[in-house]
Image (cartoon, rainbow, N blue to C red; front, side, top):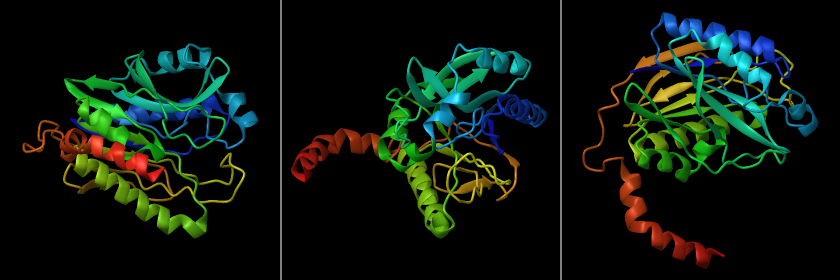
Length: 276
């Protein structure tokens, strides 16, 4: 299977400009015969850190913006994942929608959302393309053991992790190293391919209220922790790679996580009680 990511800069509050970039990304994906491709976190709306700004561009799954997205992209062959600020009643979620040929396969909402105005997602759906199951997590979700483990236990062979990173310059290297280490761990312990799909910020309008660096660095890691492909930094880019999703760890099935969950879970709960 050929999988990929569009590392792009979104414009806060400009749905049409961001949609145009999705269309161009899908044109590229189809040209290179990519079967599943991701776009960054909150790409369609931008990712502001002020609630009033986020709500201005947020929309529901059945809103006109979503219908326009489905209509504009229905001709493309690639299954794609793209993020947006989702309104669900009065609540606001950091959500990714998974789309194929103009139809919504489902959505996933970030389970470790750290903006106070975002509700936490607690559902972990698995999707399928050509018989291959894949799951979606969002950005900081990849820093925790359980979200990727849950998807792997449900049969996901590929984990797509759309990101929006805008990091203070002083903490940039530490963040860079920590994130890569987290993703290598998730790939190895769960025997999955892990797609870190980041954004990039080239201009000065990040939509955020602090100074940072949107550096990019998207990549695909295989189940042995090897990086197969990565993007250029500090610029828009497109990456893809061929993987063999049939190959897996014969000893552990879905990697160490399955054995760990079965053998040590009750001990973990006991330790958590002591830690309180």
